[in-house]
Image 1 (tube, rainbow, N blue to C red):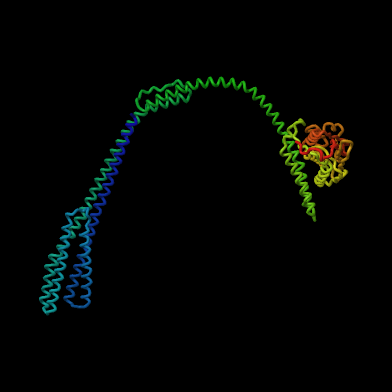
Image 2: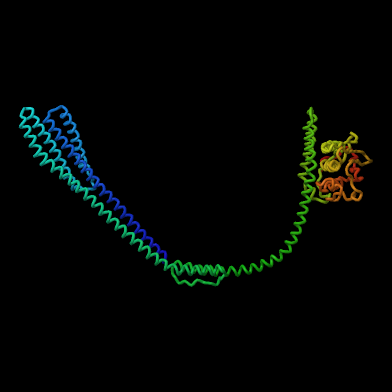
Length: 533
């Protein structure tokens, strides 16, 4: 199996790397060991050199002291003796604490050599003391002869050979350690070269063999993938290997077979889908036409919304501006202004909550909040709002109505909406400095409300069309380009729902008169139910 061959190659390669690492680790330890031995030998060599120098300096000081007998010489003797014993102590500590990796065979010899030096120095002190006693006894000739004999027999013939032997031994030891270090480095170098070469040769050989084993299966698999990619699902990989590649080729062929089966099913499904698409195309076309119609209705709906919301917002803003510009107003005046703003805000909220009104075309489908209301109070409140709107163009507004209540049955906000529509049109199309007259009077079982302006008027040929949706007279288009032609149609729909009517008379360039007629409540208001929906 291919994976076992690959695992064997990995294990052998890892073994080579591990062996090379162990070899390098052992070599580094040996280098450190020999280097330490060499350092120890050189340190001992330095200690012997210092001992030799301090010993000869001390011997010279003793001899000078015996010859001259001066206080200065005596002080130098003590100083040289102290340095000599310090050098001797350093040599003794080096011998005792010698590197254990060097072995124990050389340690007794070092300790014996140090003992000889110690004994010699002790004996030399004794001999110098003997010479000093002879000199103090007046036996100067004998003292000189004893000193000369000590110098020749002890220092020249015993101490000097002993120190030379020790120095040569340490020099030889250092040279031997250095030579062993060089030999170890050379052996390690050749061992590393041999291991690296063997590992490289094995890696190259195993790589070539593995490449030969996988090249043919990989080429067969790549060709199979290319054939499948180009759409040849009938192609099959012919590979007899009983390894992972053979297993992969078998499953590849099964995959190609399954793809062929799936492609046949997909072709059948595509035919069915094409048939269903053809069947749905007509439905989509019909739905598209319906969506276009709905989109047009949506646009009209949004236009109606903008028209409905514009007038209350204009009045609220004007009422607030007029109130803010006024000076020295009392609390009641501010309270009245706030009441009007609250009523207009409630009406605006009703518009927002009932915007579907603009999307309905049948009066029977409209939603109204029926109640008994005083039309006199409603008209008076609306006239106050007209004055706010008319103030921007310096237009005056007057009200001709009795103060007696006039009761009608209807939706207060809807009727206010009709008054706003008529008042907004009168203000928009009146000339600056003009006048608007609002009148309220009874006529039998009906009450009439009229609004007379001095505006641009309506041509006779357009009087019957102004209540059509989106219609605007040519002179209205020239005067104002921001209208939508929706206000009067809405006012007519509201009056129809209340059982009333709206009519118009007009003279072009002279003004228009709109008249609204509503049925009166014949019974007393307290006897009628209220807030019926």
